[in-house]
Length: 383
Image (cartoon, rainbow, N blue to C red; front, side):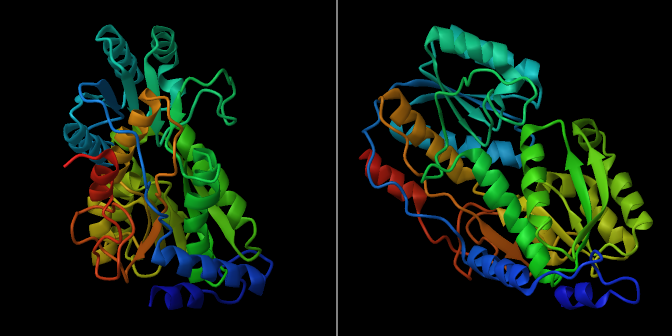
């Protein structure tokens, strides 16, 4: 029903897109991608691993335990560490670089064997990570970017010893720009039949949001009849101080012909954008997309409350994968594809039944397609 409303909103001088017509091949390609992503793109789980050595002293620095996108992976890592008999210390980074640095230095002082960075970029704690490298502490990161990231103005040597593997040489940069953000763009192109008028929320104070922006805009450029009618810049201060709702309200008022609102991540929708969409009276006329699949956003999408689409990224699973990856790192073994892809979630589901958040590909009834925890226990040879 939403797709029909979106494509029907055009009129004379308002075709729902730019001045050009989107080619049929671009629309067909987008629809094929949506169909594939709806089924889910997770790959096979690892088939072997070195047996973990009990008693390893590992620290995990969480970007912020107040956010489910950071806390759920930490919980997964805690579960997995208990299974293999590791001493895992979890530190709440509180979203502050000074806390990140202090925690890393505390880990080094504690003679930690390894440090896991939970969505913390290298640049946010560069000096402390350099100290950890000098001390010989192994550094593993997931959902994070190293200090040699090409988007940084002042690139330096990489400091991560290993990162989450997406297989086939796909870096996290490639995954974010060419897979994750493209998923949302393809959905928008398909749902609007190539006639999207987009309000795009952008954030330049995080490395990941800059990569998401690049990937999203690169794909939208292929859609000749699509147009970004308004870019709404925001930063972490806007996020924390509750200013996003006001920004969304203003953008919606100033752009009555917009039929899409794109948010780089779910949490931004949760703290004001989704509520502004509902309050505007345009909830059923504007396509609202997000990334992650957090508990509130699953509810928003399921209940038609200011969000229509999610690119699902595993939450707790990545914590288990981090323990497996750190085990390989500590034992001098190469990293392997952890099997994580993504899945499209919209009003037709699928919605998770065993968790409240997205945690890997689901069957139409919401049950998981793979049991990653059982698989890890098997390849680790633990009960």
